[in-house]
Amino acid sequence: MLKVTDENFEAEIKNYSGNALLEFYSDSCIPCKRMSPVLAEIDEKYTEIKTAKYNVNTDSEIAKEYKILASPTIIFFKGGEEKSRRRGIVKKDEIEEIIKEVFENESTTS
Image 1 (cartoon, rainbow, N blue to C red):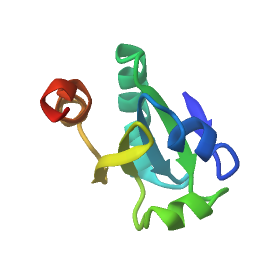
Image 2: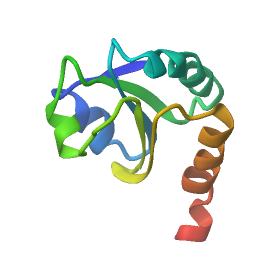
Image 3: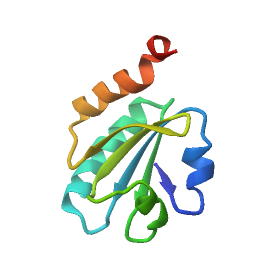
Image 4: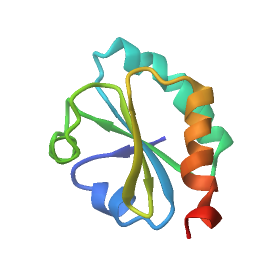
């Protein structure tokens, strides 16, 4: 899974023309650790979606910009623009529902 930092955020997420899912996490966060295998499954299943993680302990500028107040927080980006976000532990089924709503319904939003 891609590691996003303050330095590469713009290139990897903001200027990315495709779909991306970015988790803001902390190393000491138990719910974040519980999310790891779920996000690994999403990353493996949805290879057309860039799945990435941003560590709020080692980087903070992007977290401040997006007003991240809790870990984990997952933001769904489409063409570099935030389309949806969820805080806390999110079940795989819910992530897949958001993927369908935000990323797969492109023809209905054009």
